[in-house]
Length: 247
Image (cartoon, rainbow, N blue to C red; front, side):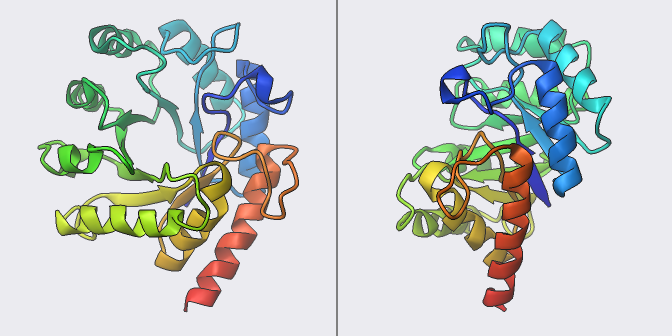
């Protein structure tokens, strides 16, 4: 599985290539899926380009993307989109159009309650477990751990030389607490300069991964990516090469 993360918290300052409107996100999703992505992760945006959990914006974004693709579509619930846990929960309860899944960062305040609300509404939960946080400890103690759709093992180490080692440490911490291999599926990914080394590690370990303008603006050769689709195509090549090398 290769999930495409279309925009993340990036905005207009990151260049015109970043999709912000529902229409632009739908176009990028269609091209990325045509390039080989099998799942979509998106950050719905206000007209001024800020992440939001607004029921109106979430509905418009999901409807636009689903009109163009037939794969699962998920959204963020990151605390930066709505810092107050109670308000974030109210936003999710107000959603009129539901995503197939939503990411919940387990180190953030109110994560348990938010995940429970999503599950109650029939929305799959991607448990965001960030390196450098206590997310793994909190998650593995949670009664909701067996119920989530997958674990997003997010490597926040920005150093491409040390990020794979950080990733292995996080995976080991999860495995030691019996989340892997008997627990939910793992999606391993890095960000910025560490994106490609961590993606290759995911391939070596046979794990799901993701790619897109949320995680990186550049291709493996250092050239700036023109689109999410270009990143997806590059990721499939890198993944296949790394998987073969790891056999």
